[in-house]
Image (cartoon, rainbow, N blue to C red; front, side, top):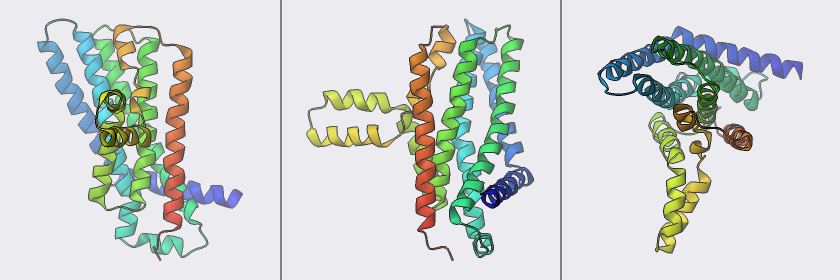
Length: 259
């Protein structure tokens, strides 16, 4: 067991250092800073609650950079090793494939956490500058945005294990947008007359993660109470989909012809 843990740790550390070396962290953080700066400029021009504009824009920036980070880090973690044939050397040694995927996933999660903490700190700084108190609801919304990142990272490592970079990007953005439209798909399915279309919509609803279940941005904006039961259900949804995507990645990569 200790050998497996050491191998996972080694792969995770290599993945983390590679993303630092190829400036993935710097590029994603600078992109976030530019977006935050643009949001602040728009807030200054807005008529009304400037703090609410900053907060709403900040949530949107954290959300969209989650899928971008998942794509970039996932491609760097697996696709680069496959393209450069590095994976042949790694897997020719006494290393199980699930250890390789586990290490890569742990590495991109660590890098994702570093990026997220940096961007969240910038958002908090922007709120403080506008005189907005950082409430529990705001921290809750930010925490569940990171759980959404975890789900996206899980699916990113899944797609990286068997698809091309182009399909990887297409699938991951589909997960993000359909996941946020899940409630609308279900509502439309209940009212559509075409049975075939209804089944297709329901398949999309149940087959894609419901990312709206992790969305507490409205409660943060309007400071409305969040029931504890909803939080537990959201945690179960986020962790469940992350683990499911990771397990599928391991199963697919174990059966993929690489060497």
